[in-house]
Amino acid sequence: MSVTVVGSIAFDAVTTPFGSRERMLGGSAVHFALAASFFDTVNVVGPVGDDFGEDEYAVLRTREVNTDGVEHVRGGKTFFWRGEYGWDLNDRRTLDTQLGVFENYVPKLSETSRSAEVLFLANIQPDLQREVRAQCADARFAALDSMNLWIETTRESLIETIAGVDCLMLNDAELRQLTREPNLVRAARQIREWGPRVVVAKQGEYGAAMITDEGFFALPAFPLETVVDPTGAGDCFAGGFMGYIAAHRDGDPDHDLLRRAMAYGTALASFNVEEFGVERVTRLTTDEIVERVAELQQITQFVGKPIALRE
Ligand code: AMP
Image (cartoon, rainbow, N blue to C red; front, top):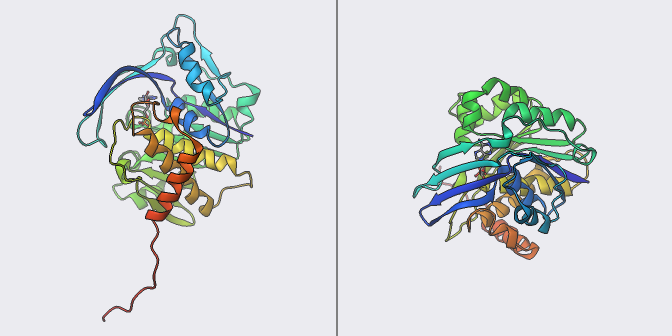
């Protein structure tokens, strides 16, 4: 069994208060794939240009990510994104986006990519996401991420795409912007009326919340003393979350399984932000993940009987 992800495969230029990188491997599909690879086989689908070379493939292959779905467009340039963060790392500014090979991209999935049980439509143009969703008709759990750019420019297409997935994952500001509803609980109800039965609101350094028909669940972000670069945290969260679901093959994920998936997503995202780009996750070990999930469990539970309160 496996997970298929379609999304950007990119070169990123990033500046944070703690340093900068002029050109590093990034993209929503890449961050997702590296995180999900700790749970199951991952098929990456997306285009790259002539500037994408062996060094970049090697990063994916060291985690045994299946790159057969990476389409090399001769004469093309790989997607490029430049972003900048200030002291508030939840607040990011996009300085440049060059679609490059994404401009005329039409996804054509191989039999292997199409037959994955779990599908993640990472952040790309919603029409492309819908195209891929249609090709993976048998996926038992499909989730989607997006961003303000698509909410602003292709909202109707995005809503149509959302209708075809089981789970929507967005930043809470994006959820509000998409639904035009300031209250998160009501925004999630609106989205569930459109189709998905699970809504995950990513809240950056404050963690993530999940709303399903069975109720509400939230986890804080893992408390770190050093956060260097938040780029890709949302995709690593999704990689841990979807990877955990893929690794549990017993039908439709219920609320309890989804809660545990949130913990793995939170753990993977926390490693990602410790260094620039994919630097930390490419060195990550399974023991480190296990230890962090255990610590997260420890810091998010409390014991003891309720006391009698004064009337
Ligand atoms: P995240 O921090 O999880 O939201 O994801 C950051 C990644 O998204 C970066 O590695 C970028 O390459 C990628 N990205 C930025 N803008 C876009 C866009 N418009 N479409 C697709 N991917 C993007």
